[in-house]
Image (cartoon, rainbow, N blue to C red; front, side):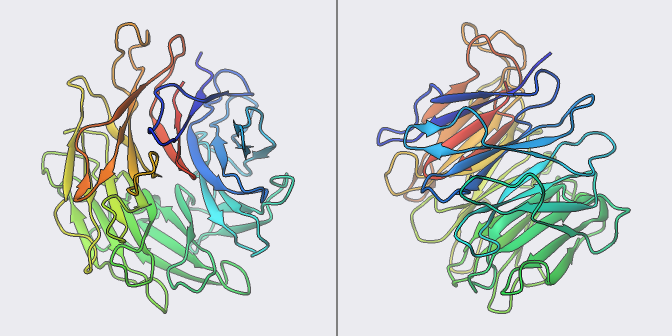
Length: 406
């Protein structure tokens, strides 16, 4: 039975090494889905180094958990400083969803979000010099009550009205809605709004949410919402920020460029400036036919309707290319942000792996005019380990990539 693992790759002036600098193994043993989710945690303990959150599914008597690993001058710690047990996890053991919250309570320490997709709320844990507390610092529930699962997708460290206070976004696809919790002096959650599916309901609006950064450089960050089962192969709805907060109607609706495709918008990667023009860009994946990932470059009017760059799976034997996408910052220090794309079901390469679903991850470098169409580095699952490597990828600043999957 697979125990799960997370692999950390450090950026440098020459890019990312093809060998992981740190490999983290699940402390709860096989069958608990260690590294089912990954997220940057920001700087939780205020020591100047970025930290990493790793989630589990749980199994048997072991509940879903989130582990915090601290960064340091020598890299990421191999032992977690904090272990958070998900509350109210019921049903099919969906595990946890994770996100960096930003500094919710303005105490100088980064805070984290832990969502439980089969529960009716998500929890916020405040950072401190000693890591995370054992119990949630606060909890927020959905507007439509406790009977509908809440927290399938979460995003923090947003600030849609640029007031300096953290906003939080929670996707609730089973209800075809997204809820936005605005931050302020009174805390987060006192003011909130709901975004509902602009199209006919299909129960996937909000399957992915991404604080996309300032796509049109108007001074206000924007939001992208994925709807992978929208008519025509999936869709992404882009909402612009403003002085009064997030607009309640999408400024742009992106449709699957290939009508034969499926699940466009199931994965989103934002918050990076790939072409160095000062505007943030958006990466859209989906992981099903035709195994493509699409890049939309920001402009003065926001995102274009058609992709600026289309990426085909580099391998002819690509499985689930785009199952995970992340803007990973500028890994080689050339002034352009870069992108990591996972293909968790790609078959093994002789001499590299032995498990049929070993997987890969591909690193693409930013450049003038957009993203390079050929990966600069292909990362493989370490020899002798098992699992679906590349099923989850996450950014961790500064310029570090984390990959899960065995």
